[in-house]
Length: 212
Length: 164
Image 1 (cartoon, each protein chain N blue to C red):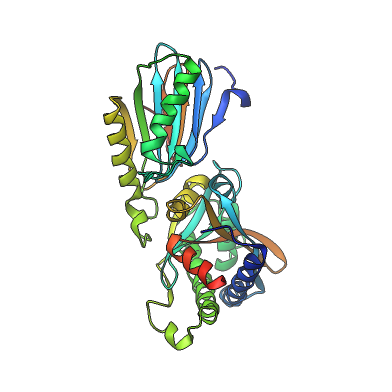
Image 2 (tube, rainbow over the protein chains, first blue to last red):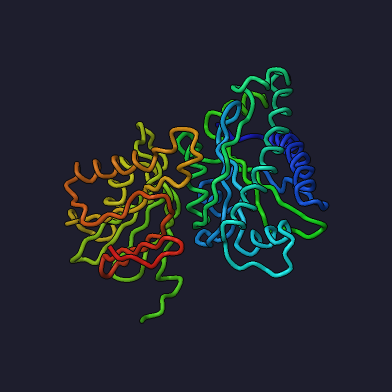
């Protein structure tokens, strides 16, 4: 993939923002309170910058990771530190006291949140991209065109190790990687959850073609 | 224990190479990539390559990224630092995890294994013995290489440091 120009990045950001809007609605319904998911940035980064996009490379982070198959292939990752992840779980589980470790219940709450928000985000993105490439929603019912996530997998690891694996497919073909970073806000409070969508090399080629 | 300064520690980024002599540490963070630490005992000289992919397919940019180019390039940089025509090297390797084993949707789920095979093949071809390995699994690793001793420390989140 060549470097995308500013107008291509802008167009792509608008499409991703449509996905974020649907993700906001899903998160609000799931938490039963106002929630906002918005695209913070969409960038083409060097490997080094990509592995630093979540903060210090050797920080321990949690992530709910979903593979994406069908019309777009790659990875979607919800990344957060322990405090931010557990605080969202407390909110969801209606707890007053702050949890301080990851048990089965907390892990399940985090992965379910990722599943609900991730599916809404992907469905909306798939629809937006179907207009861009001249197909339509009827074709989206075809599983080869729909964007289908795998069930989320919860992991706790070094930030750089998590990113490294997710960007591997792009790294095999290109010297830079495309990373969409999304921020969460719940009732006007920023929540330190990041959503990263990392298309693989094949999908990047398609995206570049569609943008013209 | 001697306190290390930032000058004594060098982080080797994804697809990069680091070399040091006499003192200090080289460190890197690995997922499915492989860290190759080369050590020359008499000269207290170390090199660390963070290898991303098995084969360069003839590409000549980003030499540190591929197993077939990163290992010769690390040796080249070590030779320059030592100002010697030849080095007596041993290798320690780590990484090659399959971290997202149940969500992988494509060939990346075997990339760690492909990297391992390529690194082992390249070292064998160059006659460099592998004296220690810490490979595979489903977790990332922090790899730290000490120039003085050639000792390699591996840490996985939530586990104690292992020396290899």
